[in-house]
Amino acid sequence: EADLKKNLPLANKKVLVTAGPTYEAIDPVRFIGNHSSGKMGFAIADELAAKGADVTLIAGPTAQKSTFKNIRRIDVVSAADMLRECLIYFPSSNGCIMCAAVADYTPAEVAPQKIKKQEGSLTIELKKTTDILKTLGQQKQQGQVLVGFALETENEEQHAIGKLQNKNLDAIVLNSLNDAGAGFKSDTNKITIIDSSLNKTAFDLKDKNEVAKDICAKFISLLNL
Ligand code: CTP
Ligand code: CA
Image (cartoon, rainbow, N blue to C red; front, top):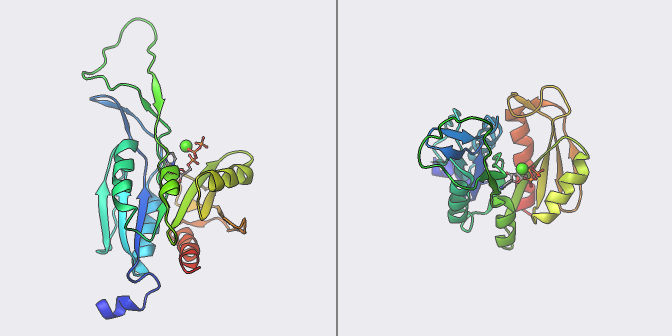
């Protein structure tokens, strides 16, 4: 097995992948979350592993399962948990594909007991989470490849390029939600990959397992620059 693995393009490469949503606790029984299924990130982790990488997969709450034994899975709940684990594993990795749908805001305080309903409305104060991808971009060393996602509904490319540059990424995967059959709950995605030289490649709507192959091929080419 070791001999077979040696010939694969990602043999001896360590890659960090994040997947799924994060859940931000409001009280002991409630949270703020999102509809990310984790499918895209798990498909990427599987594809990287199939190409010989040692994958560390940091996953938010998801029903997804992965089958490869060269995937180390670390389950997390919140954006703060995911940040902590990424800071542990990123420095020793050759690169990271940040696919998770990380919450942008989290409750300013977690109520220690279940919040009881009262007359009138309820206001929950939210504070911003740390941008994990941007933090990794600031820490990135020569040779490390950092790939992020951008989920946009308007001025898609302009916003994606803004994130690519602001977060010091090598490439960004623009997820187009304008097409039916693309996005969080779907089995298919329609992406455009933009790299730091602003080379753009638009792909057709396809199964997330096939999208993962396109993303990993780009990741491999960036690693070999
Ligand atoms: N991301 C992150 N940490 C956060 C928020 C986002 O690492 N706290 C990452 C996501 O995993 C994704 C990328 O940043 O790879 C872009 O996420 P997106 O939601 O599209 O962009 P934001 O920068 O959060 O901006 P906005 O939601 O306002 O469009
Ligand atoms: Ca966001």
